[in-house]
Length: 171
Image 1 (tube, rainbow, N blue to C red):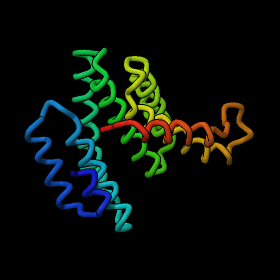
Image 2: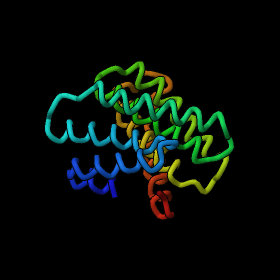
Image 3: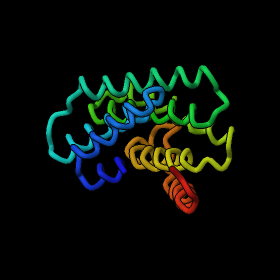
């Protein structure tokens, strides 16, 4: 519901949903992750400066909770997924701010975690969506860096991954 509210640009209602998620499930990072996502989306949509303190507060808290869950049970795919999602949003926000080194570092960790989700459960299509999205995004960015040996265009493969993933049930 909250994610749909973000997409509908009903940010106050989305914040209410995610705050309720935090209250009902304080041991999970998803309320914090999506509160940060709401703040980012709102700033982008309204062309307003980011409320960096709030966003970093949510993301730091989400990463801390996720890391503790992962350390408690590193074979539970949802614990690894929450860690990857937290790091991914952190990387995305850093890229939006122009801090590409931090974005790359956290993004690399996030993608590795998503790939490990698939190793734990090959049918965990939420991870494929993240992997395909990242590969597609990095392919479009790598076209301007084609002179680098590791920069390659994976757009077609990424689209196939995404098409396959969205044909399956996901969270």
